[in-house]
Amino acid sequence: MNKALSHQEPDQVPISDFFWGSFVKRWRKELNLPDETNPYTYYDLDWIVTIPNMDPKIQSFETIKEDETEVVVKTGFRTTMRKKFDFPMPEFISWEVDTIEKLEKFEFDDPYDSRRFFEAGDNQIAGVGDGFERNSPAWIETVKKLHPDFPVYGSIIECSECLTRLLGQENTLFWMGMYPDQLGVQINRIGQFYLDCMKAQIKAADGLLDGMVIWGDVAYKQTMLFDPEYWRMYFKPWVKAMIEECHNNNLPVIYHGCGNVQLIFEDFIELGLDAYNPLEVKANMDAVKLKKKYGNKISYCGNNNIQVWESGDKEQIRKEVLFKLNAAKGGGYIFQSDHSVSSNVSGQSYDYIVKLVREHGKYPLHLREFDETI
Image (tube, rainbow, N blue to C red):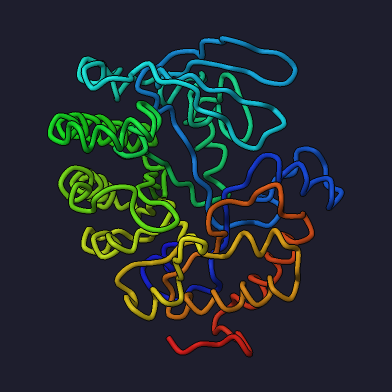
């Protein structure tokens, strides 16, 4: 991982991913694997991300409804969420912070509170996703368990991700237009809170982290969700501060942001970001084209078309995998999907993908008819 991120060619291209729980269940069943098997250990994948408690309020979920089909809870973001057990992702129903005045009065719990890192408990990001989990294990115990076998990355959300969860996307975008300066003040307050959360996380890990992921969606399929200049004014400084703090602690940084971010991609290069993820293909992101344009100014993580993986077509999967490995020439590429591995990917398809990368991702690369000059 470190060699690839420093634009050197390691022995092979690093590979890992983010897996839906429903995919893992399907993968075990289709490959006839024991119930406790996970893809990270089975394939000896090359890095793994951990999630501490980043909720603004450290509290147990308030259960509003629960039956055999769904659960509705209010979380530490003071957000009400519905998780239908048969559906892959949860639904955001409502937000307690639904006016700019409520946001201005909202009080965040201490970012340095030890419960975020050293105690089990409910938290929205770890607990309400493609699955549903109460009382998530203490983050530090997860780190200690994984560290002997994997490069372990911590993670932190930045301002835009907090706003989506705390206010909702609609309120966030409306308030940018209605109260740009007022909201900007609150963005700066949120930025400081999560910078402090990240500092506390690094301290709590006490040398056990190998890197950091910053989560922050600011774009969709076509382009950015809002004006790039507004991002540069209020969001970019906090991303910069996070990257600098990580680098001061010898931690490389991977930024995970969905959508088409080409309008601000050079900003991330300017900030010294180590790698960008997931580089969604359906949002017109292409790691090979980016590598040709920007070379080793940044590394590229992801960009393998999950829709091709979901098709199960081995010929198309082989073409996609080998072509995107061109971005690994000279280092600077981590192989992953262009978001996460969904339940629509078969166990056999993912098994085939890993074997392709292990075979063709050894240096020097031999990509056959898919070889490109970089």
